[in-house]
Amino acid sequence: MGLTDAEVAIAAALAGAEVVARNYGSTHERFAKSATDFATETDIDAEHAIINVLETHRPADARTGEESGDSGPRAGSRRWLIDPLCGTLNFAAGTPLVAVNVALLQDDRNSAAAAADPMADELFWTDGSGAFIRRGSGDRRLTPTSRSSLIEINCDGPLDRPFVGGQLVSDPRLRAGYGPRVISSTLGVAWVAAGRRAAYISDGWFRENLHFAAGIAIAEAAGCVISDLVGDLLHTGRGLVVSADPATHQAVLELVRPHLADMER
Image (tube, rainbow, N blue to C red; front, top):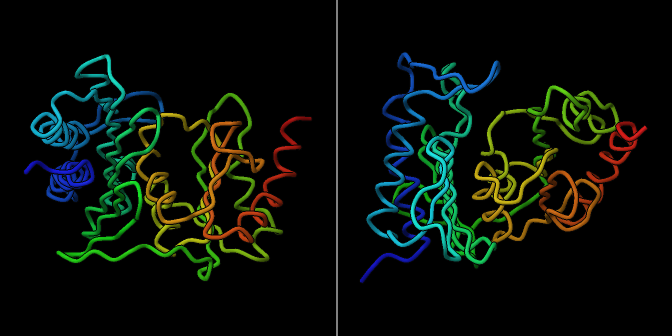
């Protein structure tokens, strides 16, 4: 019997994570993408390992990889989104906060996904109906909670225009109720689903975003509250807010609102 889509996502993410874990702590060749961004040979090798799994088990599906771009059949309703090493700058600096993300979009909807943490040897995954964390051979259902009172804030953004991020970290209103954190990896999205963060906030655009697709799918399946920065459906407007519960989500939107207003003046 062949593997399910969730099992393929898991196998692919683990194949990439094995490459990342094996190379962690060594010296890395850097391939510049821009003045502030680069890939390493590990990004490329991890993506190859992921694609090999997908070519073996889902050869008829399309694929989009961060490093290799589009491959596989152009037509069809199924596309795998591959982020072989989210947190490349962390990885190259010897900071163990990275994720390997694999997600399947079917008819533009999240169908299955896996996000592996190579350093903690943890795997977050979903089959589209439930969300789980795997340590060793055991799976446990993810349960979001705001108990930590920690909010992950994405401070990466464009250089040519304002974006919500850095100002939230220093906002005294936010700090009065929550502890801001910045890990510079989409691992933080899965951490909301796992109850390790109360919320995750990011500016930007997220339709078919290969960096965030796996984390969003896992958070959705875990029952997190997800919207854009003003509380509308994700993809309706700019940004992403993922919260453990409705009360936290409303509180986060209230904290974000004045910063959005400031940028529109």
